[in-house]
Length: 245
Image 1: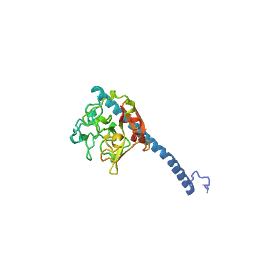
Image 2: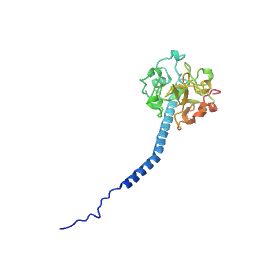
Image 3: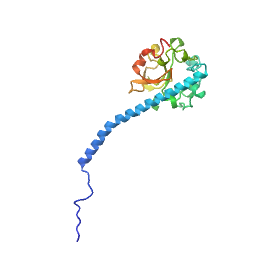
Image 4: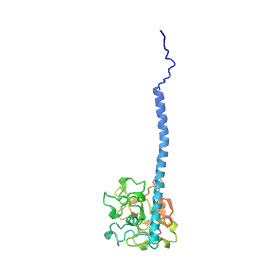
């Protein structure tokens, strides 16, 4: 009878120690790669946010060219208590065909009537759904009165061509706000020289990018760059045009 020898089998089974070594190597590689992947993901959001603001800038300037150099008003009414429904700056830019019609907020206190656009160029990619309060996270500077500097006002239209420092004055940014302990979005923010970043009941603002240290900023000449939050908060180089335009 012929005998079969199996001492040189092609099959090799891992020992428990070998399996543990492989698992440990995979865990080490994962711990090294995950931060890099997360960083790349956040960087892509920052790039997308900057692109959104450039597109917003194009829409603002197109509107301006059609209206004798003027930007849209925050709202055509004289103030918040008499605001015109569907008359906020996002409504104006979309109704005029300067931007695609976005998804309007349908939950909470705000809606299309309040200009609360939460998609497309109005949405900062770093804003999770749970933080949406009023708008998608990109806002303009609202000044309490026209004499306090440049900005968007109720019933007033600014003319950027009159600015001597257009490349240094903020047009839009992605800063959010904290109210009652919750992180929220807003369509507008205040110059710190007026309100020290307090917008009535808003406790404080916070940056979206640069690992929580800064924000993307669109300037009145159309360029976008990241600016450290502390410089914004201190109104460094008069970025809000409070002293001069």
